Image 1 (cartoon, one colour):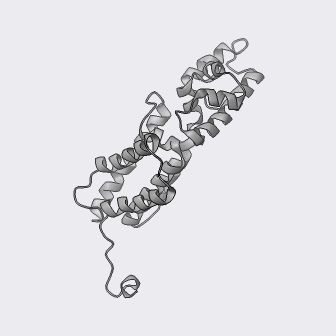
Image 2 (image 1 turned 30 degrees about the vertical axis):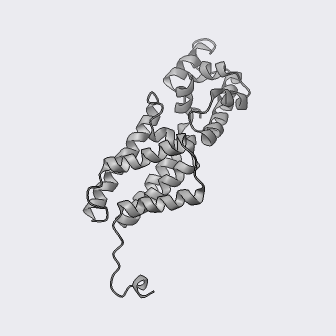
Length: 217
């Protein structure tokens, strides 16, 4: 079922017959095509991708996107779950399921940086590029709250370096988002190598118990 933003709902009412807000079948098909095209284009290029490309992929005019969905923000509201929100929430939930705190932090940092590299829309969310999108901003708040929890848990467990704050955690993700969105895109090998440097900088060295397998090797 296609979700319509408040902007789009007004358009739906205006283009319906009689007093029913239900879209005509041809208009509904247009909305469905726009939605499918937007998911593909936004996943490949990010939420800032030209609407002309979405319209071309959907075989409609750009004006139709505005008429049916209220423009870019209404379109983002309609497809955010399928573009990025589902995967971002999964990364958070997967990290929550890791029992060891240090491993939870390492797992999350690795996973969020991987997602930033693979899915440009993640960086648009982290950078709050479209603050008028309520679902996007709600997703930002979920991520921010999780960062706060991770840092508090990391310090309580003694696995984060002294002085590392939630603001530092936030800055690491924002700096990476800016670099990927506006800077040169590194090779995957270089990117993963730098992820290891990030983890090495914020996490204390793993303490090995005397006689452990790692120490004997």
